[in-house]
Image 1 (tube, each protein chain N blue to C red):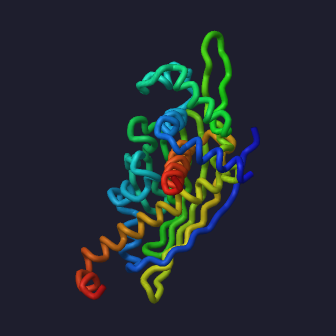
Image 2 (tube, rainbow over the protein chains, first blue to last red):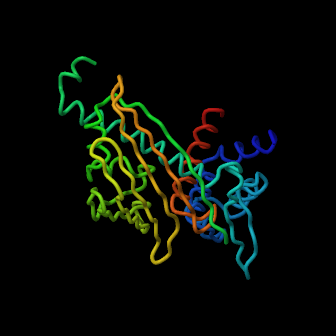
Image 3 (cartoon, rainbow over the protein chains, first blue to last red):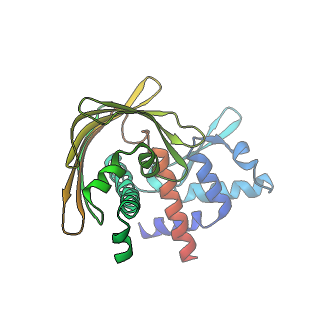
Length: 116
Length: 151
């Protein structure tokens, strides 16, 4: 497991590979499309894809003459479930709600603001 | 595909009066600030009527493509004390998830003790629901920072 995590971190320790992963969050894509924004030869770009695939971050499959790349959801958080995500969303909301409430409090009761 | 349901409770003490926390929770402009899960996402308040039997309609999602609709129904609103409402998340005509949410606003020595209960059901499994992209983006960002810190 530690080795897998090391491979994952190493795979993401590169801007090109992070760009690829970020693009794939919007859906799978052909390698050519993924390579287009990057100023490098295709063989070099393919090495980045290989690195991501070795780390289990992406999978590739051939469709006709194209190779399609897709994210592997399990790579980032096998234990994270739907409910975990919902909980995290609400925790973030409460953080921001707290900031808004404090601002309202300061605007409606400036003496409290001076005391703190 | 079977539905996935679960429940969680969050508690938070906020150093502000219940009146201020209540206002922050229900003010439409405030809600558009605290609701989006990330700066890349938007939460537009299209309809907003927080009272017993009132409804709300919100559009949310990535700024470039906010295609998720949230239909809210307020079942019971007890001024500055508690609220119970449900949220149905849709993409187009497809219902994705529903949540029953109860929030209690209790006065405490420090200000307000907020207790939030969420019972939620996903209609489309664990991996492809509204918020998934936000969750992904957050995961990736966190990983990127973690990696950058280690390298």
